[in-house]
Image (cartoon, rainbow, N blue to C red; front, side, top):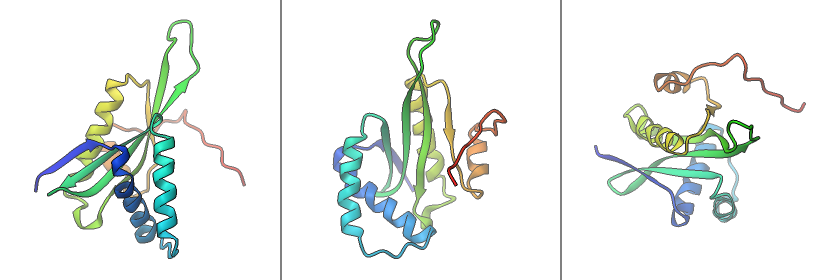
Length: 152
C-alpha cells in the first residue's frame, strides 16, 4: 500500500467535509440528515479559515483516506521574539479500515514537518484516550503547565 500525503486545497473541501462527517457519524453516533448542508457549510468554513487552519490529506490509490489539520495562531510578541506562532493539531482522522496501517503516522509527520518549517514555538494536540500512545510515539508529552478552562 502506497500512502501519499499532501496539503489540502480549496478543491479538497468536499473530501475533507466528507471525512469530518464520517468521523462524527461513526465515532460519535451522530444520525443527522443534514449532510448536504454540513458539506456546504464546511467548504465555506475551510475557505474562510485557510490562512489559520492548514489541511493535509492522505491518499491511497488516489482515494482520500485520512486528514489532519494544523491550526496556526499568532502569539503576543516579545522584545526578543517579535514574530511568535504556535500550532494545534486538530481533527486527525483515518478511515477505520486503514487504521493501524501507518497512515496516521505519515499524516502527522507531514503536519509536524510543516510546523517545523513555519518555526512554530510549540504544537499541542487534544487527543482521545486511544490515540495518546500514537502522539507520544512521535514526541508529544504531557505538560503539567498546560491548563484548560471549560465553561459549565
